[in-house]
Image (cartoon, rainbow, N blue to C red; front, side, top):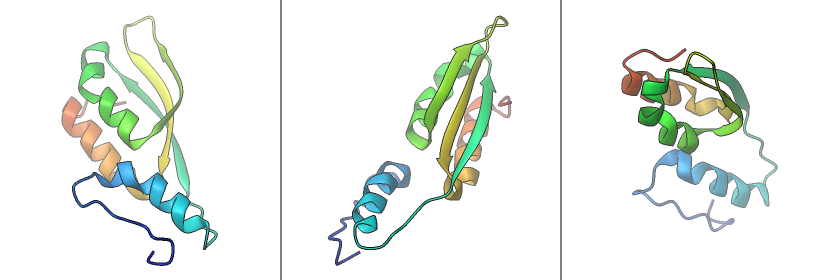
Length: 98
């Protein structure tokens, strides 16, 4: 990390820094982060509570609104953040995440 001149900001959330740090280190070391792909379905009333978290932790590949008013998305995110990602979404939706 020293050779790549990576700077870690203790005040920024980890997900916000991961991409940039890996990019800088991968110039010196070939690194690949395993990504997971997930399908998420959230009711329209829960959407506003979690959308910013979904954008922060993942990349939205596909999204659309269903006829029942729910929001469906296919997302990818680093495998190491799986537990944290789902814990945040479940806590915000009080377990109503599908």
